[in-house]
Each structure stands twice: as structure tokens, then as C-alpha cells.
Length: 426
Image (cartoon, rainbow, N blue to C red):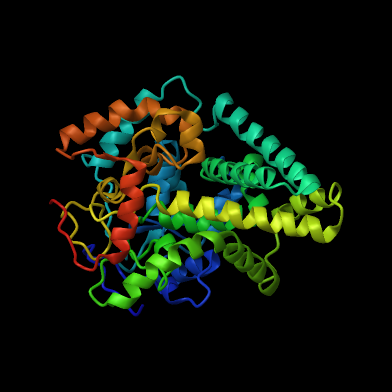
């Protein structure tokens, strides 16, 4: 796509965007080139050495180990609701950074995000914000059981109703597992690995990229599917490429699992970056072989389930919250206030009906705005924070908008066709 100039003032071009394969490892390698962290951890304009804290990090060592040599300002601010982590920082301070930040987003004490977070924390009093609710765990575990039982049934019978039900269960399980990826290390986040996608890679590409910089040139989930799907309103999008994107969409949906699975094992084998969870995708097909008439029949059934589930997952994810002509995309004229939360509000929409049910929320990427603002909080507890968000929106005169699933589905295709920028309020 060439080097694009972001319309977010001061947002630099990310090196990772030019990678041929576009993996999570590429994203982090690009950040190490761009962030001026000098091999340490950058927060704001200060550099810290967190190497001695890796094993003691309450959220798990992986978060700190992954981000060594990068700017973690946004992740640090958003992943810690209390001020405990901030109070610990001075003991790890090394020196000030010698280069300015390549990301201009702010967290001012009187800005939108800080005020909202304080209200949200008050709304969550009495809740263990570091753990999922029993209801969420029950739904996730029931979806796991439903996935295994339906897949075994499909393998034994090769009946289309069983195959379709299996695909639905696997999709619901994978989306629900996404809720756990943002939290401290837990075994339920590995439920996602059953569908070929990597929970480890998603912690990078989804949590550390998409969630922190949605719909910008830094958003992995935007640039990883370019040039086939180009959501940014670029004037150089030709009529042919815009029309072809409508045809590519269902193909991308169907191949999402396979493409990410291929990247997963390519990186694991070429970079010798194997993880125990890389064995999890083999559990379902191996189990299905035990009840099938043959290994070939089991593999054919599993493959069919994978492609059907991938289509459902792709449709759900790409049409859930971010792509519509009335939603900010890099290339549009953004607001002057660069408070991080305001970018999130401009780049996200919630949906009617989906947000009214915990099951629908967990299985359809629901409660999307609150989840972006408070990603580590379990979806079951997020609903307590609606009044805090409403109050803060009213204080800053920010309209809060919801859409129907149909509006977002239709709007996603309209966004693929759009090449004229819009102006978002200052």
C-alpha cells in the first residue's frame, strides 16, 4: 500500500506495516525500531528496566517479556485500573528517552479517559476485576463441551446438521476465548487455539495493536488484510479494487483460520518459537479420528468444520464494531483532542440486541466500546460501567451511538467502497 501519512497528527508510520508476512512478531520487531525504548520499556518519555519484575508481574510474565524494547504507554495505562503499578514504576526508572514518542495519544489527568476510568473503578467496587465472573466461566466451559461433543458427533455421523452445529460451537468458543486473552494468564484463553488461530499471536496483534490503535495505520487487523480489503478511505483506491474487495470479503472470512494457522506454524518452525499451546489445534482432529470410519473421513469433516467456523468468525469479527462510513478511519480528519479514549469512541460502535445478553456479548464481540476502554475487565462486569461512560460522554459533550447488526454489516461494505475522507468533530 506504500507509505501512508496518518491523519492522526503526529502518528508516525509503523515499520511493521511493510512486512511481507505481517505477523505478531513483525509488529513487535517494528515497534523496537520505532519506539526509541533503547532495549528497555518506555512509558511516556521515561525508560524503565522491568527485567527484574518479569517473573513477579501479577498479569503473567508474558506481557512484559513480549514488550521488551517497546513503548508500552497505552498498554500500561489501559491494563492497570488502579494506581498500584504506577506507584511501583519509580524503582525501575533508568533515564528519560532521547527521542519523542511516535504515538501522540494522551492520558491527561483531566482528560476523558482518566475521568472515565476513575468512575468505572468506583462502579466496579466489590468486584474482583482481575478475574472473570463464574457466569462467564460457566458459559465458556459449556461451549468447550458443546464443541467437543458436536465435533465427535459430526465425525461419527458425517451429517450436515452436526457439522453446522460444530462450526457454530467452535466459533462461539473462539470468540468467547478472546475475553480471556486480555486478562492475566489463564487456561481458558487457550480455547481459541482449537480453531488453528494462536492465542499467543492474538495477544500481540489484537491486544497490543488493534485494541490500542483501532482503525489507524497502526492497527494490525486493518493492514494485515490489505490490499484485498482496504477499509481506510484512501483516494488512490481504484474502482476495480473497491469492487473486488466486496468479492474478497467472504473469501477472507472463510480462510481466516487457515491463514493465521499457516503464519503460526511458519513462525514457530522458522524462528524456533514453539509454545506448548501450539499442540492444541491437533486435539480436535485427533479426537475425531477415534470415532470416524477412517482418518481421511475425520480429516475431511474437521476441515469442513474449520472453513465453516472461519467464515462465521470472520463475518462476526469484521462486522462487529469498527467499519462503517460514520466511524473514524485513518484518512479521515480526526478530532484535535488526542485523548486515547476519544480515538476509541470514534473508532468503535456498540450494537442493539447483542449487548442485552451476556451470551450474545461473549460470542459476538459485544459491549465493544467498554471492552476497548477496559479490556482486562470481564464482559459480565463491564455492564456495571455503562453509567460511568454515559456520564463522561455527557461531561465532554460526546454523543454515544449504537447501531444494529444490519447497519454495521451493510456499512462494512460501504466503508470498503469509500475513498473520500470525513471530518470528525474537534
